[in-house]
Length: 103
Image 1 (cartoon, rainbow, N blue to C red):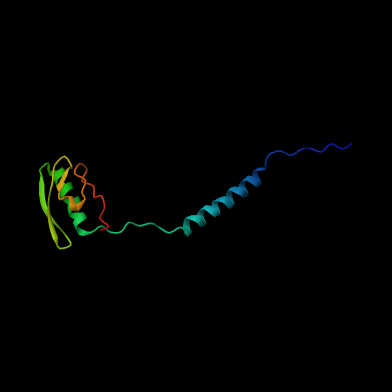
Image 2 (image 1 turned 30 degrees about the horizontal axis):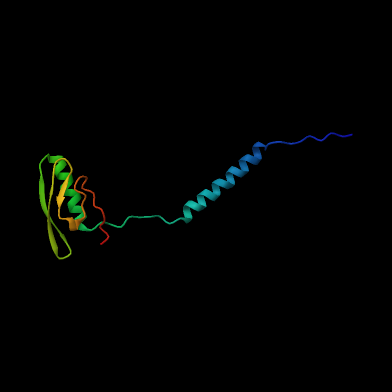
């Protein structure tokens, strides 16, 4: 009787081929996916961010006016990073983050 060997595992060549194929698939998936870009924020958002940055850098409160549509809003950025503004601007008073500028 002839004994046959049971083969377990894979060879290094087989493993290399599979990894190469997976690498090609990953590259093609990355190339095929669209790049997600954030839209440029409106000018008033940049003004709020700049006022907050200036207040933090200068260690003094900075007051400014921003125009959103036909309305002019007044805001004050404090040295600790808070922004005091009209609620219509939807600026987080503690962090100065703009909650939504898609409107």
